[in-house]
Amino acid sequence: MGIEEIVLLDEADHAVGTAPKAESHHGDTPYHLAFSCYLVDPEGRVLITQRALGKKTFPGVWTGSCCGHPGPGEGLRGAVLRRLEDELGVSATSLTPVLPEFRYRATASDGTVEFERCPVVRAFTSEIEVRPNPDEVEHAQWWAWERCLELMELPESSPWYRLQLAELAPLGDPLTWPDAGTDALPPALRW
Image 1 (cartoon, rainbow, N blue to C red):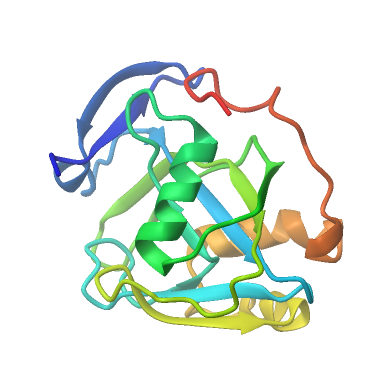
Image 2 (image 1 turned 180 degrees about the horizontal axis):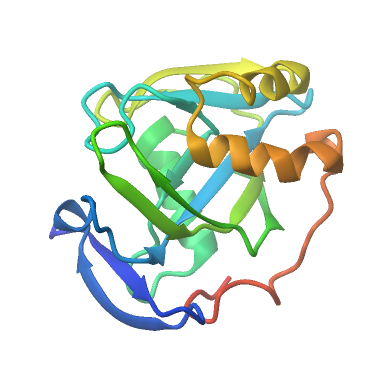
């Protein structure tokens, strides 16, 4: 596998180039393309994960099911499905954009910055048994939505999780989150 590249964006969310992922996250991280995914089981539980303690950015924080960076020319669906398999060893039966316009900037305690246009996707799965990649995920647990909302208030949750949950909470039960469509996805990202 080659060097993982991220897609750099301008202020209008158009692709303006690429950069190696490993070298791009620091105190002055450039604005780039990412995504977050919330994996939901048939009972409406959400898979919540703790990032591996060895991760360069935000190690050990609790967050949604998975996140990642679409590669150059990769669509959002493909990127989400790839990362679900790579991080958790699961597949999804359907994907729905729920917060296509989400973006954030956050600084970790060590000064590392995340600065991302990060559409949020809900994915359904019937695969309850997950196989976390220890390089990516320390723990993975199925949680009731009420517990997910409680995590939003705790400092051990990731900054992007707290911001996303502030927008997801009013949507109610994850089983019924509305499809926000693909029109508001960034120009640099196809579905």
